[in-house]
Length: 136
Image 1: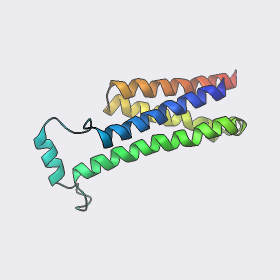
Image 2: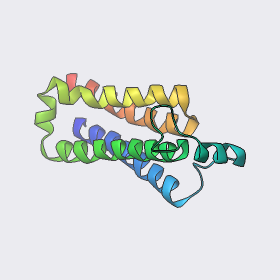
Image 3: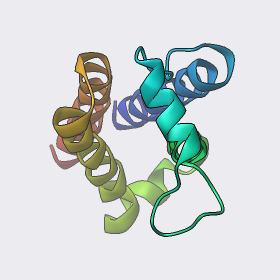
Image 4: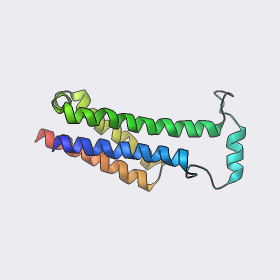
């Protein structure tokens, strides 16, 4: 059960990352309703640099966020499939899924909206369930 819950939890986050990339690159779901905001984002830079615009930074941050979720899934699914004893034997590798998804849950609660909050909650529940199953 430990292995299954790890795989499901990581898969949920990986799918969320893929959907996020698809929405960014192939839809207008990350655009804004108020076109004056879009114009403002495309015509101003953050104070840290003038080498990018706020719009380019917005897209880049969202894409890198997606890649982080996908990378996590690409690391933990094969680990759980092929080296579950390694994960169980390492406090570090057995704790990362809970800490990682708890961090995303905080971000979803504080800054995002209901759907990612629900999806990340499912992942965290899987990881907590895996930990609980491991210690029983």
